Image (cartoon, rainbow, N blue to C red; front, side):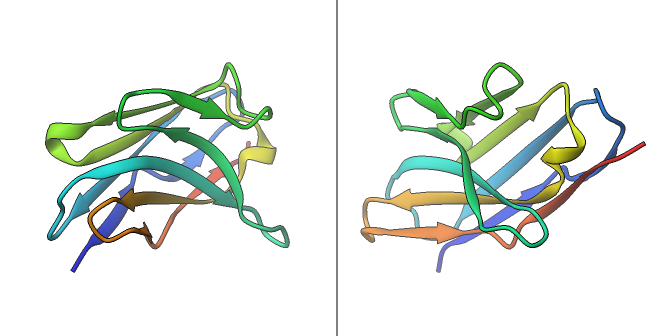
Length: 117
């Protein structure tokens, strides 16, 4: 069984920073792409950033230049460094991993990020 667990969310003031972490555990052969999604109240879940197994990255326009996605393959971990946070970044952030051995996506339960003064 594969599990993804996010951590690092919390309350931060506008302009502040947070670093989210995601650990993938279980029977893992290899992790292909890892992504972060977010869902704000009353809105649909949206893709924030993706990183491939080779390290290529892609970002939503709304977070480019402020967020950085990274991963530590040896630890089966992914990260999202969020800087210059804005109130509109408030959302539940979800980690997603595509596992080649199973041919499917797996999701964490999410971590809440609240940006407010």
